[in-house]
Image (cartoon, rainbow, N blue to C red; front, side, top):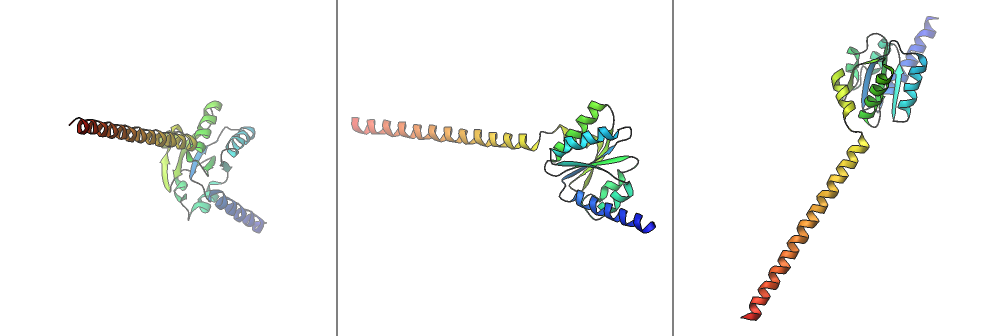
Length: 176
């Protein structure tokens, strides 16, 4: 019986290690008071956004993250915890989780881990307020486009001034 339990725990640790592989951010939430249906809805919301949520024993999460960028998660996993990870856009995982908890008026954020550094609840909320990756990329492209338009306008104005100056010099030389 003890061997079966040990094997189950080892399998869970392997699953958790895989869960954290390629993640950009991990947000730890206190999920006490949430029903299974509410957690399932959060899971579905996150699935469409390259994010996932897992509820597991805190000691198994600590073991699974021990030798990874998420090792500092150990200080955040106390009590009933869910870990939300974002694989593509770190902002979206935090934003979706916070919005959902706000709608439910249940659940709280304890903190998170971003790029190997522990971040506080306040920093997770700040992260959630940032624009998504797609919005940032479109803003950058817009800025590059307007910058290029400005350069084109400046160069065409310079060319026009040179042409005008050349024309005036030619008129003076013809008049003399």
